[in-house]
Figure 1 (spheres, one colour):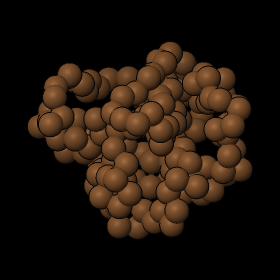
Figure 2 (cartoon, rainbow, N blue to C red; figure 1 turned 60 degrees about the vertical axis):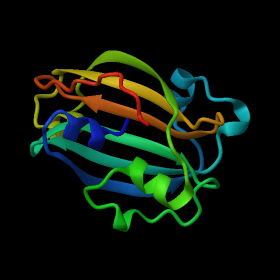
Figure 3 (cartoon, rainbow, N blue to C red; figure 1 turned 60 degrees about the horizontal axis):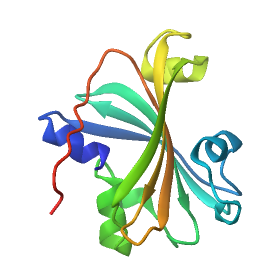
Amino acid sequence: HSFTAEVRRNGQKPGSKLLALETVAALPADLVARLSVAPDADGAQLRLRRLRLIDDLPVAVEDAFLPAQQLPDLDLADLGEGSLYAHLAERWGVEPAWTDALIEPEAASDEMAALLGIAPGDPVLVAWRVTVTADDKVFERVRSVYRPGFALRVARYRLS
C-alpha cells in the first residue's frame, strides 16, 4: 500500500516534499546488497527522494529507485501531494502486488537528523524494500529512514 493511502486510512494528513529527482547509472551498492538485486537488474534508475510527512511532521526520508526503461518520460510534476503508486497505475498500469522488506535500526546521520528534525545519532529505523507487480516485475526499490516518536499502523486488508 502506498504511504499516502495508509496515512489517510489512519485518519491523518499525508504530505511529501520533493527533495531530488534524477537519473542515476545504477542502484547504490548498499541497496543492491540488502535487496539481493539480480546482476541484470541494475541499470539506469530514476531516483526520487522525498521527505514524507504526517500531519505536517517530517517522519521519513525516502529514496525510491524506479527502473528508467520501464517508466519512460516519468514526470512527477503532476504528482504534487498525491500517491506515486496511483500515478504509476494511472499512467503505465503499474500496480504493486507484494513487497519484501528488511528493517534495521541505525543512528541518524547529520543529514538525516537535519531533514527529520532530530539530533544526530538519534535512533532511526531504516526500511529497505523491493516492490513487485502481480506478474513479478520489480518496479521500485526503496530505502526509507524513519524518525522516532511516531506510529503508522499498516494493516492487512484486501485491495479489491
